[in-house]
Length: 348
Image 1 (cartoon, helix red, strand yellow):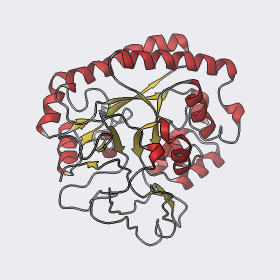
Image 2 (cartoon, helix red, strand yellow):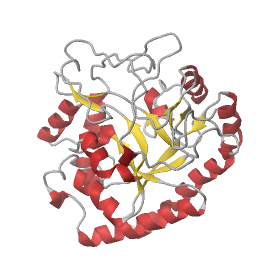
Image 3 (tube, rainbow, N blue to C red):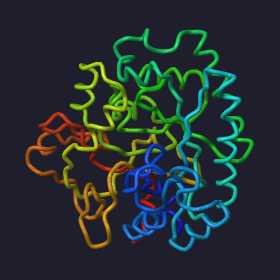
Image 4 (cartoon, rainbow, N blue to C red):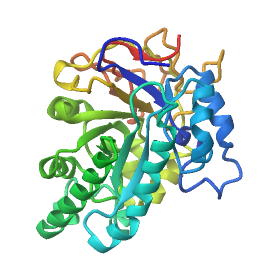
């Protein structure tokens, strides 16, 4: 299934992490659904594609392409953390990147829509994971000048490896790593020519404003992860000096709002820099609705967002042509709409 609309259209995908399936849970948590079930639910909900999740979760590379094709799903990309500032550690983990790219190669002939993107993040350190969210106000918590030079060299090596294989990567800011605060994201953009993943959840947790980042860095954005964030939880964890794992543990028990979505807004011209092949917008961290049910944070494609009283009903705002984040009465951040260029790659 091709994304609809003109060249540069954005196809909207979901991801296994929306169902609780990611590196920490797959193979450890018996409540995580199997990959085939997730593929079926994502297809039934009308998404154009899915992110890979942990390698092998959706199926071995030799059968994954057929599984995707049977359901009319493309592959949005795959997330990978690498230690760019540590040359020896990076050398040891490059086989993980090759494995990811081998999977892309194996399924690419089956895929509708844009090619998958290697979605690259920093692997972080124990010190950063122990004290997330500090670098936005304390730059000394971040890398020093020499470490940034090593980071730039390592990232350049990875970017070249992706491009040599025919895949254009994107960089994904991540809470509790060396790239979480806005100034750290900007540093990555200054030191490289990699595209940026507009990662609304992690950008907010890192102290940033995704709408402002879209304005400032729109020409570098080549991928979107639309997530919400429990900002109250983040503030509490920082105040208590807790580690990044406290954010995820407390966030899992957070109250969810119910929403319906419309996918008809447009990006500003500066953000519409997707290649002729188009780009993926992955909507993650919210369970996808089953067909015929509203789900939680489920896309309906028919109405504007609506939120229960006391959650996100007072602060919804659109900025320019793209509304992403509104702040609710409980202090949490709520996503508003998914951007699209020339039409949404979603099944009718």
